[in-house]
Length: 386
Image (cartoon, rainbow, N blue to C red):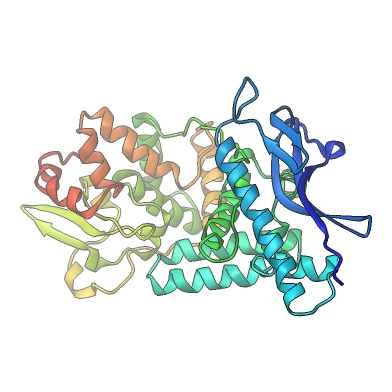
């Protein structure tokens, strides 16, 4: 004769977090022995109502929270699934133990996170995602693996995210937005896992923190000072090289991924003016941008058709580039935090200051779709400036 366990959803009041949220567990009681299985969910303590069948969220009254009805429905479905597992074990004449129940209950969720990452990346590569995007996934993969060598999808809950955030802040010395980016990577993987492996992710109730910082850009005067420094040829060759392609990006809006892959075949010549006509390395969006006189003077475009497959610049790593830029800024006494991406902000800001329509600047910077870019192709050539 089988002994049937009692199943219900409970919370742990002793583990309430700083937001006054309590974690939910599936409680499995068999022969008066209680075991609990984390559901990777935190809910506001004041919104919970205890019933004979377990905890539910208030759907009415002042303690009602958004999605309470949907959450209760989800919890009911979990209980139903748990009961089906018990019934399956019973029908197969297997002794019902918490260990067997846990293995069966987590069987659809206990995949290795890092193995799942590899599957997602492989699919992204088959879908022709950009190299930079794929590299970004692997960068976050390595950072997460440094934190914990073995992670299952079922491990990722509010507590895990809090601990990883603290690790990035205290050990890696990351700022709020860098931590946000790392958590977005985990959110992406968990969202992908929902298609086949898990029912819910902790991000449905976990708030990511992002600070909208003011982005530095160079003024006309500062850009002029840097251009004169470049023309003076007083810098050592490695710094001169970095300043060359940094200035080119200031005048064209190309980011690091675009500049590192820029070839002479990306240039066209029409009505006495050079244009860069290509797709962004980051997102594949098509853009057309005029090459101003100052930008043209930075490179040798004579006979560009004959060297079409050559790279225009000798670009070093982004980290070393930013290090050199920091040193260069001290020479001209520019007291701003300047990175290579500042060039792109500079182009956008100065273009708008020249009264170039916002939608035209967006197309030049490759921010929108190919269709929208095509619609503004003629407008681009009407607003060329030097």
